[in-house]
Figure 1 (tube, rainbow, N blue to C red):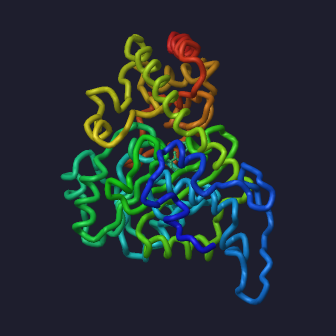
Figure 2: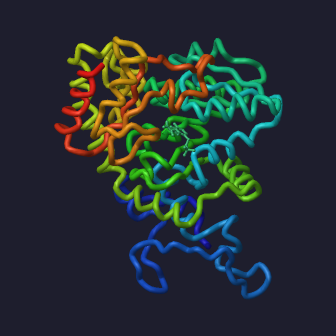
Figure 3: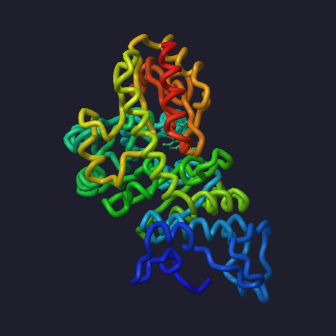
Length: 392
Ligand code: P1T
């Protein structure tokens, strides 16, 4: 392939703007045909003119041109030299956790996606990897939760589903001083709103199923990393364990990423309109949105995010039954798991996405509702939430 990852990622002296990288990084007209869209290369293997003499690709698990384009593009958006695409967000997470050896502790921020909690507590825990939940609201919580065997700090910011935001820079300072690495799940923020690598994070992970794909039609995962040694280890595992993203899926995410910036602008704008409706409705107890001054992590979000995102959570005064009535009454907001796509979704985390955290320190309130605010007309979305809340 000749050029380095960093060159392909746009790491040249004249760094291009985010929107330009989203459309061009890793992608240029196909040399053979002039096609302006990166082809989907389905070939599992690549011809060699002599043993070891090839055009940069040997076998599609180890490397594939369409995956390569996606890996280069999203790495550039995250400001990282290396990107790795996986079959799902959890496959990406699993690939990262394989950096550890049994006995090395994982500290997990005390609000996180239920599947991440399940992977760490139900798969890695029993295999001999100690873990503990930790309050990351300020760096003191991390210091208090620190144990001598800690090797990795894992956090989401904003978190799923409470949308708490943690100060990435402050957490990295504490962790690095003590010899641990920091993984930031940037799924909710996306690189358009927040770039954890520039704040000191060692590894960024995504469920590409969400905003990166953006259209609820592809499951994928992504890892961005700047440190070459870590990148090499992660790439070794990607090839050795094999949880790669398929070429068609890579194409779908690559296509989604092209419009990430414009979609995120509208997601944030629509989320603000919904927050206003929630704040004035008598059935609502508490609105969780990082822009609100009383929201935990408002300061961290203001410091490290360009805007506050398209996810909004809230609790209702009538408890679980009222919450279940509201999610069932919504019409434009589809009752479904997942998030981050053009269409609006509503869900009950306690019984859906975070059911696996029931009874643990990561359990969520049963009166909690989570909204993934899409990019439909704001007035229509507000009217739908208002009528659904009237049934609380
Ligand atoms: O579903 P998958 O692509 O494997 O990604 C897992 C994942 C990782 N990190 C975060 C922050 C996530 O939200 C998810 C998936 N979350 C949902 C499906 C959900 O509805 O919350």
